Amino acid sequence: GAVVSQHPSWVICKSGTSVKIECRSLDFQATTMFWYRQFPKQSLMLMATSNEGSKATYEQGVEKDKFLINHASLTLSTLTVTSAHPEDSSFYICSARDPGVNSPLHFGNGTRLTVT
Amino acid sequence: GQQVMQIPQYQHVQEGEDFTTYCNSSTTLSNIQWYKQRPGGHPVFLIQLVKSGEVKKQKRLTFQFGEAKKNSSLHITATQTTDVGTYFCAGYLNTGTASKLTFGTGTRLQVTL
Image (cartoon, rainbow over the protein chains, first blue to last red):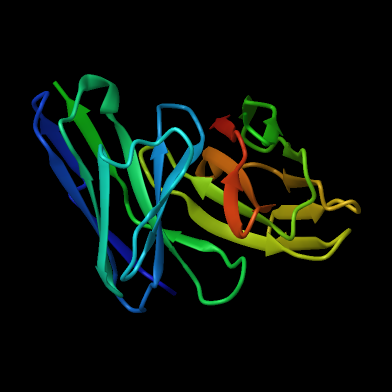
């Protein structure tokens, strides 16, 4: 089945610094990838849809200047958390979809971000 | 607010007991998907239901999609410790021009011996 690789799996950074998270589709091409955020014991909240070769589509309430998304190739999307603050600490998970309308998602292993 | 709700939020059972989680959407869904997330892990796709009233089985797991395509359930027979995790339903909500996969609130299952 489709494999999505996410890196790093965890990161600790100081307040004010930026962190980049990579999401790769290993055995298929993904024109669209999805970035989710999950707080402890809560559900997954869609942050943005990453579109290869064009601008990402952000969900309401998600700051596009804070969460920069780049989808430069059919196998790589990156999320950069800029000027991170402790409230940005969370579990960030990327995913890609099987070809076809309304198909299932395959998730990366997630990145646990801790901002001190 | 959250448009796909699940109950219960948490359930603790003894191994061998049955377990059911219910998923309810405020709007009609084109399909319903179920995912399992183990503690510390990422969601893993279990199954997709498309047709109204559809029932599917995977070993001890039984999935149902409601007639109105607004609710679903997951039933586990004779739970095992390997069933521990959070179970999420997810559905595509048609909002404007884009269909987005919205996850339910999740049900965390704890199984003890």
